[in-house]
Length: 101
Image 1: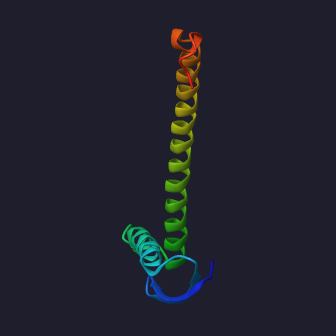
Image 2 (image 1 turned 120 degrees about the vertical axis):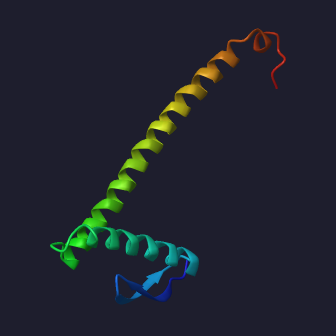
């Protein structure tokens, strides 16, 4: 997929960003980072801009890791549940009388 060049502004810093995403997705991503940086900066006057960027990155990474763990737990639950259902179907009386296709 071809990457396009986008001019973006994150936390007041102009950047050129290459991405294979569309404009709407790039805007969503930059807004998310902008919100997290502003949130970190609002925590106090002692928070430097660099620290705010790092805090924002850590917060986004934490959200990502939490979502991944949750999705893996859900996926494992669904795998176990589907194996149980499949096993029940295979051992049902209908499968023994040849009604399966």
